[in-house]
Image 1: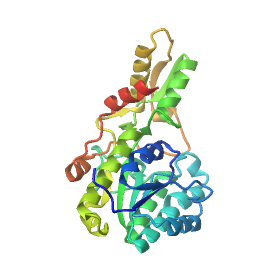
Image 2: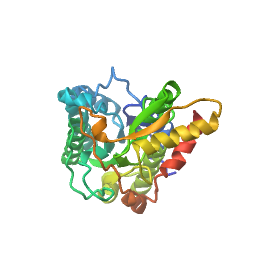
Image 3: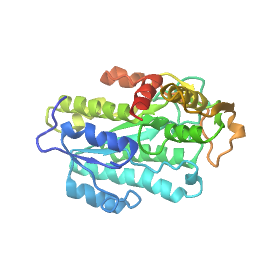
Image 4: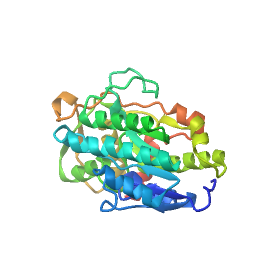
Length: 306
């Protein structure tokens, strides 16, 4: 792994989150990782974001933090946009001033889910929820600042810690006889650790290209938007079923719920979800030599940690 420039700092938001927690450990070999807590850098307050960046003066700003309450965003769009757009714009503007590079994470929700193929970076965006619209606005705001940047769109993030679909399903499967799970939304689960490891790998590649000098030149060729989701595809029902199957295998004496398939129409939510969240991560593999882990493989690894 290439070393960053001597004394380089990496400013990491959301270090207590699913992805941020993994990044905290995996970015350590690349520089001094600075992890301001919410009191110091509140993403709902763009001015506090600016103050922190000016104080730290990092070489990299890695931003996995976001407003992710998809349904709640429908009733509080102001907060969603403050965190997912305004804070990201502030990050980009400050990074541009100090010649830092930004790594930002986005989502499959920037698409409407009507395509018949896995989405590529060049496909037209058309979010159908406030959350998706706010995340797309953040992407656009970052690009408009002119800062050197990488944007990783991902989907269905989960891991052994935090709040996520997997842990919720496993808890409910122990408590109930039947679980009804949507079976007509397609995508791929993405392991938070795989996403973090990919990020560290990409940063190292960029540093190797920059050779300790300014990052803008390296990212002019290597930056931009990349899709970074687990390989393969399934549905929420398929994900839940495989998780419960593995749990049953590990705990043969435990009685787990039956997983019943339902349609999206049978499970109405305030925010509309894309029916197709499949993402083509081929550009990531081609440019950086990183292939995202197949979702069943990552699920086995996560289940082994529980």
